[in-house]
Amino acid sequence: EEQTGGVGRLGRAWVSPSGGIWITIVLKPRIPVDHVFMITMAGSIAVARAIRKEFGLGALIKWPNDIFIGNKKVAGLLLELSAESDDIHYALLSTGIDVNIPLGQFAPELQKDITSICAEVGHEVDRASFLARILKEFETRLQLIESGEYETITQEWKSISYTLGRRVKIRTMKNSFEGEAIDIDQFGALIVRKDNGRIER
Image 1: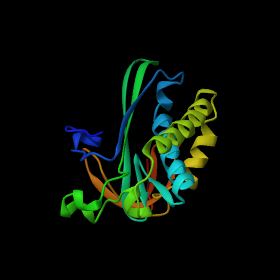
Image 2: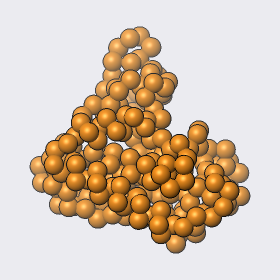
Image 3: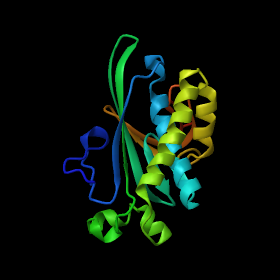
């Protein structure tokens, strides 16, 4: 029903009050380690597609792991891994979705950047049937990945991307730069054309 210590990427706090969907899917995927980001891609596609099919909302995927409706974040995913060399012991795909949460429950500084399903459709929704739809959508994509259909997943991800074609600011441990997000490669890396014309992966 809720998390009291939710975390997002880079250890950031993740606000997860009652009314959302807060789940972790435990996986033992049969894929090469260098394609493990495909699991996050499959999860992102599943959440976005489920939102579109269940509620008719134009959900998009913001690289690397967020789901947006309009210009506001509604969900995020986090993949954790236990592996050595090319052997994946297990993967944990955690997903947090703001479902039946009135925006007034969030701190004022968050309200301009986030939304919830109930805020978008104007009423509470059935979380169980929505989650069932997400899991079904995810299972379909996971089976494609495990059968080596990487390009199918990549193309579907691109078709509902919030990021591609937009100006982005990239921050790494060493530096930061801006440019246009033009593609993602087969391993899930974002391809950016910098202002000086150079392509960065």
